[in-house]
Every structure is written in C-alpha cells, then in structure tokens.
Image 1 (cartoon, one colour):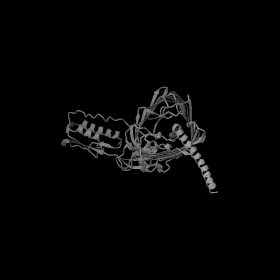
Image 2 (spheres, rainbow, N blue to C red):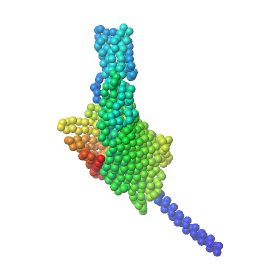
Image 3 (cartoon, rainbow, N blue to C red):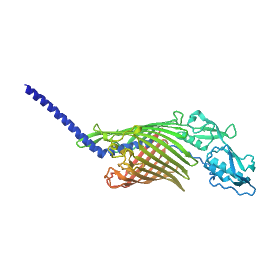
Image 4 (cartoon, helix red, strand yellow):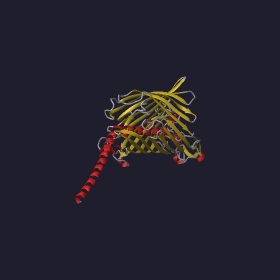
Length: 565
C-alpha cells in the first residue's frame, strides 16, 4: 500500500511536470519567434507608427507670422567727413544722453577725433547719427545740435531719447506684460515688431499698432488694436497619409482656442484615427509669448494595432508611443530684415511594443534628450530664407534610461546629433506668369550609431516624395533636397505645383545589407487650394531612382481634405 501510494504520488507529479514543461517549451518558442520577428520586422512597424505621428503633428501645426519693417535704407556704413576751409579742430565728440555706446558709435567718435569740422561737417555728423538711430529702430529719438563753443576743441551733440508714455490696448483683450515694451522704455521699432509677432501668432487677428504723440515732447503712446474676429476653430481632416498595415485612410479632428487667457496664447487638442482602427493618436499643444521669449508645451500619445503572421500563429501586434516636449525660444537679434533666435528644448519619449501579449523588452525605450537650436531668418528682395541648426544629446538626468541597445553597446549613449533644416522661397514675375520656387533642405550628422528613434529617414511627403508608401532609407547621417515650383491659378486661391527631390544616406544604412544603394530620387505633381472653408491638396508622386530591394509603388496618389469651422 505504501508502495502504491508512492507510485501514485510519483505519477501525479510527473504528469504535471510534463505539462508544465510543455507550457514553458511553447512559451520559449513563442518568445524566440517573437524576438526573431522583432529583429527583422519591428523596426518597420515602429517607423510606420513614427511616420504617422510625424504626419499628424505637422498637419496640426500653425505657422507663425514673422514681422519685418520697411524703412528707408540709410547709408550708415561709409562715414566720410566733408572737406572745409572754414573749420575748427575737434579732438573729442561728446554725445549727451547717449544710451547705445556700441562699436559704431565708438568708431564715429574715433573718426571725428583730430579732425577739422565746419558747419557742413557738424551737420553731417548729426545727420549721420540720426540715420543710424533710425535704422537701429529708435525712430522717435532725435539728435540735436546745441549752441557750440568750439574753442575747447570739443563737439557736443544732444541725444533726445524718444520714450513710451503709455501703452493703450483697445478692448483690453490682452495683458500688457506679454509685450516686450512698457511705459518709460525708449521706443524701439524692433520691440514693436516683436510685440506684433507675439500678438499675430494666433489666427483670427488683424493687429494694428500705431505710434501717436504723447503728452510730452519726445514721448509717444503705443495704441494696439488686435481686431480679433475669432477665438476658436474646429478643423477636420480626411487623407490617405496612413500606412497599409494599420489603415491608409486617416480622419482627424482638432479644436483650437486663441487668446483664452488674454495672453496671446494658443491651445489645441487633436485626435487622429485610421478608418480601420489600427492607428489612433491624441495630441495637445500650448504656447504663450512673454516679451522676447516664446514657451511651448507639446504632448502626444499614439497606439497602433494589427495582426501579424508568425510561424504557425496569427498574433496581435501593438505599439504605444508617448512624446513630450518643453521648449523655450528667445529672440537674440533682429533688424529691418533679419532675425536670430535661440532655443532650449527638453524631450521625453517612451515607446513600448507587444507581440501576442508578450512585452518586447529589447525594443522598449524611455529616453530623455536635451536639444539646443539656432534659427536664422532673412527677408530678401522677393524671397525669404529660414534656416535652423540644432544639437541633440541623450541625457539620463532628464528622467530617461539607457536603451537596451545602449546597454549592449550597439549604439552610443553619448551620441550627439546635429540637424540642419533650410527653407528658401523665391518669387518670379515673368508676365503674364507669376510663380515661385521653394527649396527645402534637411541634413543630419552623427559620428556614433543611433537608436532607432533618432535615425535619419528619407522617403516621405516631407522630404523625398514618391516614397510615401515605402519604408524609406534610414541611417545615422544623411541629407535631402526638395525642389518645388508653385504656379498660382488666377484668383481661385489655388496653385499648381510640381517638383523633384533627392536624398542620400551617408555611412551605414539600416537594416544592414538590406539594400544595395543609399540614394533615392522622387517626383511629384499636384494642385492645392481653398474653397471657402474647404481645403484640398491632391497630388501624384512617383519614385524615379532607388536601390534594388526597396519596395515601392510605381505611382502614388495622395490627397488631404480639410474643413474648418
């Protein structure tokens, strides 16, 4: 009896042990298969989701208006005193109430030192300084010539500073402290331009800023009228910008609030979904100007879901992306036709993937980055130039963690990424034809291998067109050049456009050994415009030259329909 009991117990134990071993064996096979699948296909799925996120963010973006004043161009470069017979020796120029004391002023003082000035020479110096102040933006500051005693060999000029007496805001619909000027400040046109930009960053306004005489001589009142006609907008979109695996057709709705806190602030909440339900995203954005600063907060979360074939199973794949950005931008310099800004941005990105309910730990990311940037804008004759340079570095102290490929040493945790983006627009008037050329150029450089989310990708509607449905080319460094000619069509608020683009990956290409080339060339032709509240962009793009192995369509039809309330 004891022996039988032992046998039974032993038999029972062996049965469950065998079942348990089968379970672990199947789980092991599933995990190994999942990892093998992830190694070969997950990068493509992750890139497609990242491309959808990028398309959504760019679609909801509101472009800001730049302000450059048109003033008479005074020649303040060549300073040449007139030659006079009746003149007085001058050893020093004294500028009473001078507030600039910059290099140009010091150079003028040096030129006048040990010179001989008569009536014309003194008037020339005063006029030259007056023109310089005007070009520097001090349009209400005056240079006066008081009664002189030149026996002391000193020329004295008086600077009558033009100041702001009051800032008057019609309808009191903004708070004055968001403006870069206040009562008592020396009036400068550059500050007025900056204030105009702060107020015009939201749609639905037609801002007018007038400078009127104040109560005292030399003082001026700043009168601001925003002419605000819209405090909100609702915008819907319908396009085929999605990917095949989660659904080509995307629908979206965005709600915008303008000046909700009387701060010239902008807020939006947007949602996008594929018609199949395979892709969904939600994003929100808030920005506020304060003086020469502009602050932005952006957050987005997306999910993609699809069925994938794996060995003998059909498994559910799911990807989740989260993106957070906090950015501050400051105007560093501006004059009549140029502006330089600097920015500091903190990024936080989280991505997670599952296959058949199994977490793919090697593909998870929780990254923190610091990005510093410089932007240069110039208003040229019938042209504009907008160029940005940024530097990005992975930082664990921002709350992120080293990625698995950083821990394994496959990529560097100290990588530095440099990006250059340039937009140039030039108008041509060859009567009766009016058209403009637009150049978009982007480049990325990194000496180290980068994790998937930081790699440079070419082959999309935002760089090399004609490859919108392909995986594109990925690498640590590369560049693209996008060329487009636009032809406005009469008075129909529409334009015909066509273009050709070139892109190239430098160095290693990913996935490794998958393609036999690093260059692609694409083309596009389309028409876009608006009919009242309806916007449309319909185009046909095609790849021209690409490496063997890159899966692509011969022709790609693209459309994006928007409606705005």
